[in-house]
Image 1 (tube, one colour):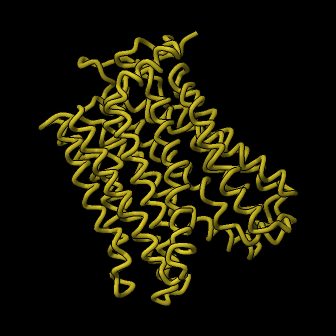
Image 2 (cartoon, rainbow, N blue to C red):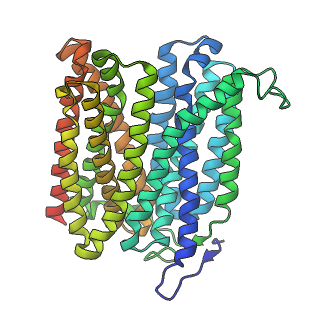
Image 3 (cartoon, rainbow, N blue to C red):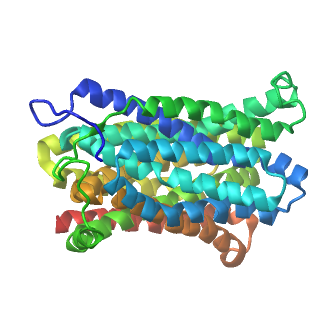
Length: 433
């Protein structure tokens, strides 16, 4: 039985009012999505002390238990977004990761926390493919970039909010402010934080229930299911453009991870910044640049599409990817302020290029491919971006430069080639378009 779908207007698309209400809902969902994803990073020390686990085990909770599972589960879950009503997929996704986050709060051992964290990864892996796919049926091509930019802005806000809101909740729990809630009096503060995070998630489920399934543009209605063989054929036929685009976005992610994960060490080791200063400065800069870059990138993408079509979008992505290379030159920074400015340059240029890149991927693939196509973006960003960007920077510091104070040169050694390759891949997609 097919889902009830929202009707089309005179131009064949849902009304702008309905489309932007859906966008508001997805923006809020993205905030909660990224807050739940990164909250564990704030709770490392209390979890470690309470469960008597090692740093290696903590890294497994942050790495294999979430990111690897998220990347691997994303591909089949992306297929679900292509063959099932997207609203149902998103509601199920939020429900699963919310209950799994609560389960993390009740975990009594490393093994229980590991399994619960895996379920968080599986639930969250289902959201982005369904969200981006449904946006493609609410917004025509000339407005789709702005919609994707707004969604990605929600992710930037959520990543920063996980630190601010999580820190506030943890402090309140430490002061016993939740002790009057039935069942909370005997809970460790970090457990209270994880359980309380289920409240905004439940509100998101209620909002998602107001989203109506749109008619799949160019792909029949929601009851049609393209055979997997046809989906694979579609990717093979478009490989000359899709492969460069996926590589370009993944390479930008390599540089993102190198700068985001190691610039704090650069500031503390070379310029004697305190942890509080690092968190406040980089947290604010990362949030501001992510929001500005995603929104501007989305709106610019649509403006360019109206004036010059897809090729104008690809040319802009190539230029912004080239500009972000300047931000990789943190090794040359003579003081902390310069290093932060270069970090900000990379962050905003990368956000713009990535937003245009994701928009172009959605434009290149057909409706029955959108879920899997979006999952492939996450797959590349996590397995390539996080693995190379984070680990390769450490390898340069430990084995190439053999000096902890040379972490700036390590960041540059990884991010600069990644930025150049990203720009070249965007340009290659332009030449092949």
